[in-house]
Length: 201
Image 1 (cartoon, rainbow, N blue to C red):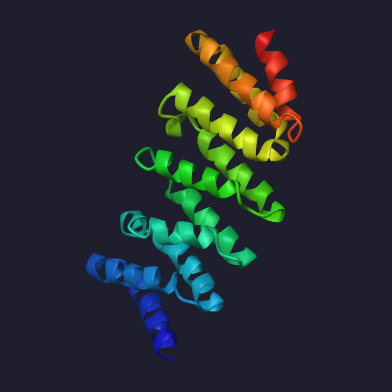
Image 2: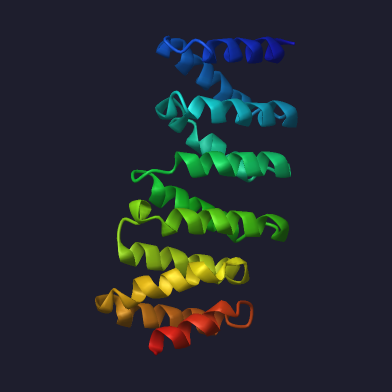
C-alpha cells in the first residue's frame, strides 16, 4: 500500500514541470524502487525513469549503477527496459565504464539475451561521439567479438575493418591482438576468420 501511494506521488510530481526540487525527490524514490524485490515495482519504475530522462537526465544519471544492476535481472522484461535506459544514459563522460560493465556482463549472459545486449554495445561503440580514441574502440570491439562474435552483425565488423584500415599506426597492434583472438576464439566465432584475412589484405 505504501509503495502504491509513493508511486502515485511520483507520477504526480513528474507532471509538475516547473518544480525541479520535487522532481529530483521523485527520481530518488524511483531509484529505490529499482532495487525493490517485487518485479512489478521494478518494471513500473523503469517505465517512469524513461519518462524522467526527458525532463531531468542529470538526476537519473545518479542512479546509473542501480539501472545497470537491473540489466542483470532475471526478468527478461526488466532486463530489456533497463538496457534501453542505459543506452539512453550513455554520454562522452561515462561511455568507458558503462561499456566495460556491459562487456563484462556479456561474458556471463544467457544466450537468449546475448543478441540484444551485443547489438546495444555495438551501437554505443560505433558512435563517433562515444569513441574516445581509435585504440579504445578497437580494443572494445575485439572484446565484443571475442565474447559474442556470431551475434555481431556483418556491418559492425565491416565498420571495424574500416576504422583499422584508416589507422595505419595501429596496424601492428591490431594484427597482434587479432592473432591472439584468432587462436583463442576462432573455433567458437567464425567472424575472426573473416576479419583477419580482410585486414591483412
